[in-house]
Image (spheres, helix red, strand yellow):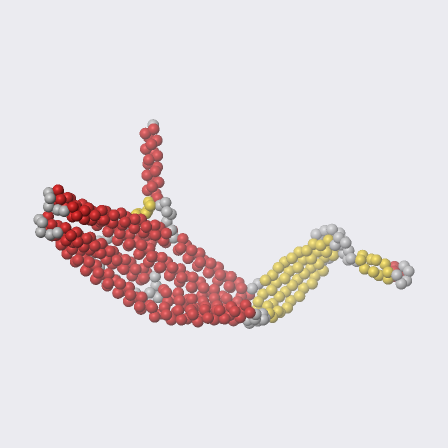
Length: 437
């Protein structure tokens, strides 16, 4: 019975760990997961929704309907006293008598409405809200593009380090082999203590290199979790095994106008903000109407059926013009210069369109050239190391020359794996660039 309980607990723990582990086999899977889970992308959606609501509010602000309905029920607990000539009531001439005036209970029901007939500022606000919606959509795409580029860079850094870790583990075996060869020679009296020390130091160094690479992988995984918004307790693993020597076709290099579109929308936003601030100085014409009913009663009642309601109403037109003050002038001046700056930034981004495309092409060609060069160097350095190891065993070569050729081989392996993955990173940047137009 206890055995069954133990197995059930163990299964539950393993099942929980499997649920918390995320395995990615390609960058596309990472980006797809990011679209579903990223708080940054969800925030972009919220900003777009906010801009859409702002557009609806701007439509309503054109007529700017304003109205109210009020009901007042008053009880005059102490009526005012007025002085009247006493002789009117049979009193002594030349004297006055105190008389209470007014009605104890008063009910008031009133309705008031106002709407703008001419409101240039409201129309400018609607135009501004439409442009703000376009700007929010463009910024959302631009932020997503930048996020995906950062994810791609971190993703391929992890792949590079994984390849280096795999190579380093093989190099650890090679360094142990060198140490074993030197130790055998030392025991036979054919090598010095210094040679044994150097071989041991080389072995320790390459093992520490393996440890440092493992730490770097862990750090990059943490950086990837931050970018994707993955909980720190979850385990993620990248299992992509790139073919480093795979031939690569030249991709298509499209001109990306997303940054320009963002700058253009920002310029339009600044332009119409300036125009909207100027329109705030213009007068508005409004139509208003009011209707009210009053009831005066001597009885405490919300609606006294024995007393009629007295109706009154009026309509009219109202022209409003706000005199400019220091704050209004300050906002107008600020929006003017923001418009001028946005215009210059848009011109700059227009020039950058072709340059960005050329830069991606240049980076791709550079990565291809570097990969081919590092591939050849890696083969040569490895061949040199193998021959030097044989010559050292035969006593033809010194240990320093053997270790130098070994370290050169290690570095060439790192360079080749790095340049190979850089080709994949370059292609991913080009694909992201082409997908966001």
